[in-house]
Length: 257
Image (cartoon, rainbow, N blue to C red; front, side, top):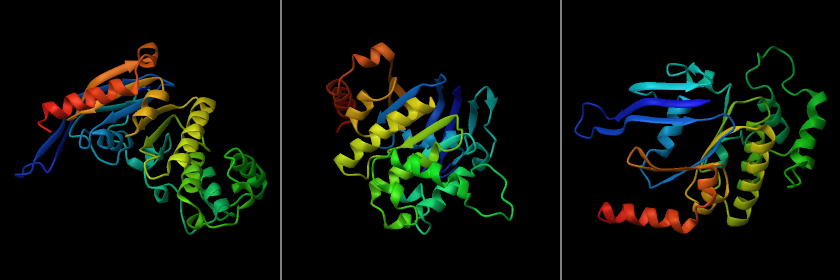
């Protein structure tokens, strides 16, 4: 379903601060797989997501999605098949627009825009039903501007908007990191429900080791642009937070910290 094949990525090439983050990096995911990714700062987690989404180019290698080489494809074209939820709740929604307008915008993703109204009245009831599933009372606030909502409410809407149109791949970039513990738990429950209902192939980058262990079908740890730990299905179910923490501590000692 998704493959990073022989990827190399340099930052500041040709300068004294040149850094090679990835050298011949490869990762393959199967359709419907839910991959949790952990790793220390600078390990390459977010850069990997950016390479998949086309936010940054690869210096070498290929990005294959659904058997198609998308390495040179522009970011906006990849976005037709990819939904992404960011760490900052403000990045997944338009704060100056109402909930209804945001939902309509997401509903029209990838479609041609003419001179017709941006909001289809026939779809409003559907938006209410989808918002009601969040159990946050947002179905009664369709005309409230998103910028006035809490971070958790905005993140829930961003998550819902990502999956409104058919997508093949869901990217979760530390999407609970900016939320309080209670709200983060709710967002993770919603995430799990949406991923299972839509059968989405998913990558979730997180610093929350418990979420990484409890959610998803596969767990990967990255360090200095390499995958140093990769467990799937039954093997993953035998992993505990303490095991991941011990590996983090081992890496920290090796690095002289």
